[in-house]
Length: 274
Image (tube, rainbow, N blue to C red; front, side, top):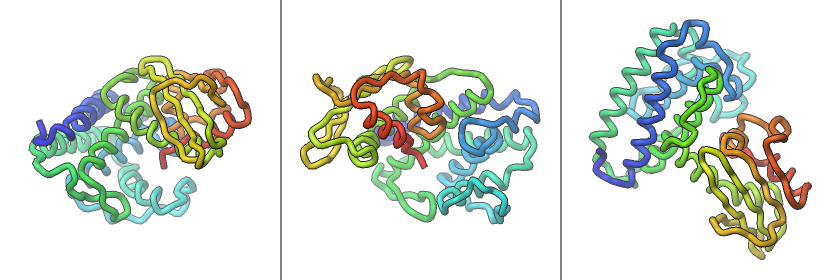
């Protein structure tokens, strides 16, 4: 148990997801590590490499000294270049090397979380030399490992854990970004409401309200006259919001009522992860 209860939810979700990932990849044959995943340009090995690298940085380990190849055409920004470093340095590691490094990292990181005594507002290392609070760092690690667990499950055709502790954190984090998607990116008109109705393992109904000044907010109360209602299953929702699929590819899983042009604009801007 961590000293601060506000951190425990994130630590528990992280533990559940990271242990699920370890179970998923432990029995894989060498060739299975090269399977493509829904995460753009990354294989099973790449995702596990990314997780190992990010958790190692949370432990305070130095980043690898490594030059990226020039033909990684999916690397288009400083952020993606930063993330790719931990991935590319492990691209030729064998299956036993990958699983043993993952298991050792989990042991070290779990010990760190059990013994965590720092205040949640303590500033810690973040990508690109930035800083973030410890609470935000743990929240984002819980978010990241659950989403990547789902990437691996899709690639390995082993569905599961769609309603695990990490799923709830991912839901809440994605919903926080929804007002910007609707009000700013999609340009929903002032004094309008957009309803999102999600069913499946994780069910929820949320209304995004755009006030007279064009600012968006989200709440759990229904709207009697929404401009748009979007209904979809939970898996479709998080895959869209995390940039794993485009709306056109899963159109049959999305039910749209109301202003079709506004619905299209919302769905085109639905992805909120880097």
